Length: 457
Image (tube, rainbow, N blue to C red):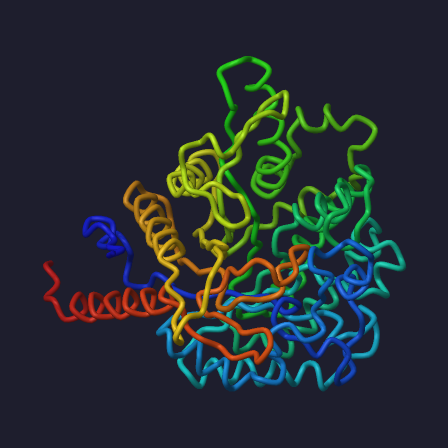
């Protein structure tokens, strides 16, 4: 079986398009209580009975903290341009304020230097959900005080790493932190309060905007942006109540974040829906949130289909499903990117996460994950189609480099293009990794050919 990208789509990718892979600190690092690292809300959440599907935690994860050089060589072997990683805030600042942990910062120093030595651009994310427990004890993201703590943390990380990283992302998927962490309670910190969730979302956006202002004021050299998880949302039928439900869900997932970032306002229909749960917004907050970005990152996995009665069955869609039960729908990525370009004045866009969990089996030293390879190839083609239609796309990153701790699913779901044997922690590139490596080799060859062609004037 081949997984070719259409030639017309392949030609759409510019010479400076960035190809990469992505991970996050809590999911791969392990060493959860070593070398001065403080506890995070995910360390706490994993101890809640029933919170994690397999009752596991991130104490060891992929042991990336102790296997850094091996993993850097693994990343380099794929031929990627960039590696997106996150910093564990409690590893570098155990309580989220005050004392700085030099051993923790030293790990990221070695990571960044190791990437650069291998010709790989470091893409740093400041917050991929593992808030220091000490800050949660003071209200966490629902408390306005956490906003300034984050700004201080961002500035200190820039002073330590900003001269060597290509880009700094403030937050990864604030919707997840707010909604899953504070409203439904299925992610850390495990709260179930809509008012807190909405306030947390506002504070995450505010801390993003203020951090960008502070970083630029101190001369940050890196590109600055934010990463959102977005999907096109459509109604299950043409019934008016389904259309209204889909419009509201689009407001909560997409417009709630895009409108303040690019229009300086929250969507009126969502504010009306929230009523007394609407966030407390201070004078100047929305101006800060709308601080211009150098890039916007998009994480895409599937589309959303909404029924007012809650009875839409994804298995009836006619499309394949991943091991998460998510519909494989590459066209939705093109639709989303076109809409973002049409409805908001967006900066260059990156797909910062895209991938799929499937039930993988290691047999004879190989993992034949044809479904994942097909998923990645079709979504790369979807990005190429958006480029062809004029969307300013800057890069694409596969989620994830390796199988890891998949949050509330524990180790039961495998997203990696590299297999991890959790008993031995051995890494084995899957067929999807070998395909991606070959695809990137072809991209480099195309770049080299283009760079030697004469330019017409």
